[in-house]
Amino acid sequence: MSLAAYCVICCRRIGTSTPPPKRDTYWREIRNIIKFTGSLLLGGSLFLTYEVLALKKSLTLDTQVVEREKMKSYIYLHTVSLDERENHGIVYQARKELHKAVRKVLTTSAKIFRNPFAAPFSTVDIEDHECAVWLLLRKSRSGDKTERLEAVQEMSETHHWHDYQYRIIAQACDPRVLIGLARSKESDLRFFLPPPPLPALKEDSSIEEELRQLLASLPQTELDECTQYFTSLALNESSQSLAAQKGGLWCFGGNGLPYAESFGEVPSATVEMFCLEAIVKHSEISTHCDKIKANGGLQLLQRLYQFHKDCPKVQRNIMRIIGNMALNEHLHSPIVRSGWVSIVAEAMKSHHIMKSSHAARILANLDRETVQEKYQDGVYVLHPQHRTSQPIKADVLFIHGLMGAAFKTWRQQDSEQVVIEKALEDEDRYTTCWPKTWLARDCPALRIISVEYDTTLSDWRARCPMERKSIAFRSDELLRKLRAAGVGDRPVIWISHSMGDSPALKALQDDFLEFAKDKNFQVLSFVETLPTYIGSMIKLHVVPVESADLGIGDLIPVDVNHLNICKPKKKDAFLYQRTLRFIREALAKDLEN
Image (cartoon, rainbow, N blue to C red; front, side, top):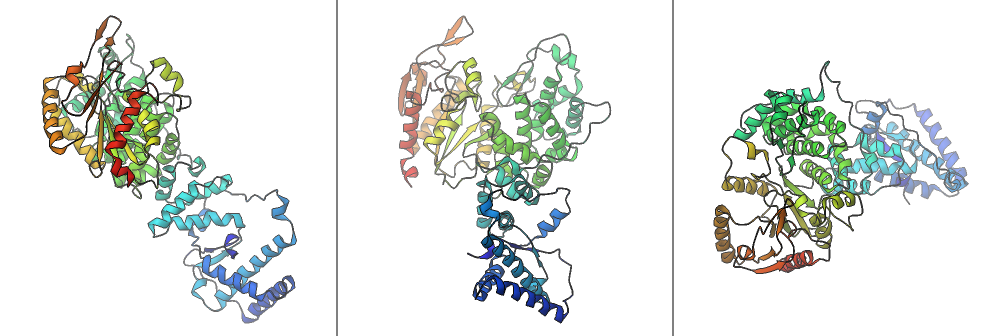
């Protein structure tokens, strides 16, 4: 075994030099070493030579990081194992002393002969279990991308280190490694240092007020009319006048946020949500992202995120903003320095699928080592969310309908109360997003994407007095986002939930049929046979059988209502199993390869 497992040679700070020792001092050192090694090992010159050669060949670790660590305020205590087999016995002690002697020989010989080895390197007395940390750090800074990725993978799979060893990596690694660790499924959270302390709030100020000031500092250019309208409303209207408006706030992503009707002031969390919704739209513009960063937005949003730990809607909107900012590579460094990677790494491990998926989007946009695509607002990768060696053969896109959402539409069928109770339980028993939980396991070679978009029944544009966007405009916007995500580079399967007939949808259907027949698309349609209850008194058959018949592919009636036509009752239910079979059959050639 070479000496590489037990000691490491590290780099001295560049620019320092040590004059060669006097000749008699040098030979006296050598003589003492030879006496020691001669008494330790009979005929051991061959072993010593082997160890020296192995050391010089294998351990040339640049330790500028070590020198920098010495300047930090952290003090790391090297623990000693309590296992007697590791710390006692003549073999252990002999090897340890021999290693010290070898290092001394190398240092002295390098200095006396003016070897190039002596200029940048010096010795560090380090225990064998420390070598892996520094060697992995060195490997993670390699000019070879493959080596860097291997180093990050090895770090993420390490679970036996002491706390201080994880902290060494956390402080010494570069942003690429940190982001890679955050995107590695098995990474220990001790790799991530707590975010830096946040600046104090201004005197006589509040988070709500600073959020309004941030919004006011952003340009009003390049915004659509509805965003301008609601930005102005958020800034100019008082809390009391806002509360008087019926209908309340609406989210961009299709989830309503109704006001609590009262004659008093609107709760600050609601006002903050209103401002956040406007900032989300601003963050879709690169120059506005620069303004958010320049005006302390990264720190303010972090304060708001920590303050609203029990408010998932606020946290999700904040992560949408950070995810949009991460689309701009020149902002990656400020995002990392502000501590957001540590926050998002923790969110990635959340059992709440919506939270972990928002975090996954941020990290995918930050990870330029392994991800070429960029995921814009409303485009969420459900699988794979971590770095993986699994080749991706095809894409499956989930598109919700009117009043739908990227996650809630595709949950397992159940009542709202049961959803709340079971969301915290084992996802094998209940899932809040079956494409991520079931389909990802059954077809790991697929990239699964769920798309969220604005609909006039579910977003704030329903209350905007300005002209609403056409279906054609929204289609172009969605197409642009999907192309940025690399959709179209592989075979694609679309899974959508429709709300039925309308003149515009009928025209789209005719265009689709012509295109599908020309390209020989495979199509499978499910149609509900039960009416949907609207309130307690009204029941409506939203999509009758004759409306659902596209005239192409298979049409399968299912005894469910319109809301549950996309929500299988369980994994072995007909809805899911027939969908899975269609995917496997349609992509059979691609998945085989």
